Image (cartoon, rainbow, N blue to C red; front, side):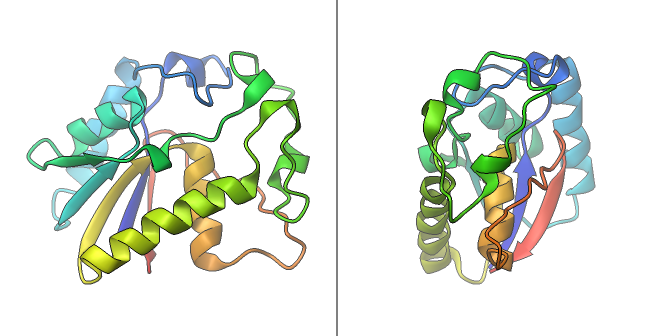
Length: 176
């Protein structure tokens, strides 16, 4: 199965360096344009199935990227809960302890990384069972796409899943 994993387009929270997490905010105009650019870039890619996070910013992105496809909404693709950090500036935020797979930190209301990993495992196993020989477009969030990268490529020996976030409106292709 080929996965085309897209991080949603920009929101005003992204633009202003504010942690979103489970705060459900829509795309801004720049985010809409980013989604339309991905639509053009992927125009020659045969997409068989489109699956999106249920959050506004991801769902709007999916609609703009794949306007002629039915979109399957899946709440397992929602952004990682960031607890007490949500709605606050992320400019000086140090998130290192939350990147450690083995430490699996969940203080301050932050969803632990193994929980996100399990959500991704469940989604990918289900998609693989249904669409093994297909190309699936997944529209999701920064933390989720990061965990998806490590799910496919393996957890490093030291357990540190350094954030390799896709920027807003970017994508990566993964083979499962």
